[in-house]
Every structure is written in structure tokens, then in C-alpha cells.
Image (cartoon, rainbow, N blue to C red; front, side, top):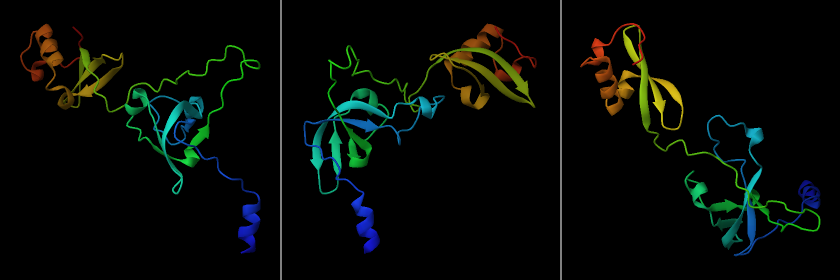
Length: 174
């Protein structure tokens, strides 16, 4: 009982938000895009408008823009994941850009189209293809991944073969 009393002496009351208030959302539990460092991610994004407040559970429904919905982010947040928005003081901070949004990139589950097949290679009788994706990435993918691609048909036609098994055993690019 005494420990509870002592611990509560140093706690402050949580801020509560009402519908219509502006808040920032913590990025601590957001899934990061591939290849981005945690330390470069902003601590909060926003501001966003509170749509509903459930004070009994400290849960808030926030109006999310489409770029966050694309990441399948749920619009309900606990109070601990929100930070109050304070309007910019133009006298102290001239020309401060408040509504800059961090670029999280495109969600990982979105399908990326194949632009072209650049080359192939055989390793231990396994065929792999060098794929040039529409987003600019170039990766090596197995035949199983590529067997239904139109780009594979085009690649085979450029090399003058009808079946992937007829491809030369040395690495070749058209």
C-alpha cells in the first residue's frame, strides 16, 4: 500500500482528448519499410483529428489519411500512443512547415510488377533469373517464382529457345 502511494506521487494525470482535437501518433510500434533505419523514423506523425474518445478505456479513434491506411494501420489508439498537438507560434518559429509527412514508401504487401528479365544462371542444375522490377529493384529469382511471367516468354523468345531447360548453361543476357 505504501509503495503504491509513493509511486503515484510522481505520476501526472494523462492528457485527455475530445472529438475534434488534433494529435500526433507515435511511430514506435509501426512496421518499418524495408531498408529504413529506426533512428531516421520520426517519433510522431501528424497531426490528425480525433473522431471519437472513449475515456473509460483511454482509447481514441483518429482520422487517418490514405497513405497510413495503405499500411493497414488501425484507426484506434491508446492514449499512450498519442501526443497532443500544439499550434505553431509564428512569432518564435517563422515559416515552420508543420504538415510535412514522412515518406514510409509503399506497403510491402503491395504487388510489384516485373519490368523485364535481364539474365539467367544455372547453379547446381537450378535455374534462376535476374528480374528488373518496376520499382527499380533488381533481384535474382528462381524459375518456380518466374515460370508464369509474360516477361519469361519474352526472354525465351529473345534467346531463341522454346523451353527454359534449353537455355545455355552459362550466364546470358539478351
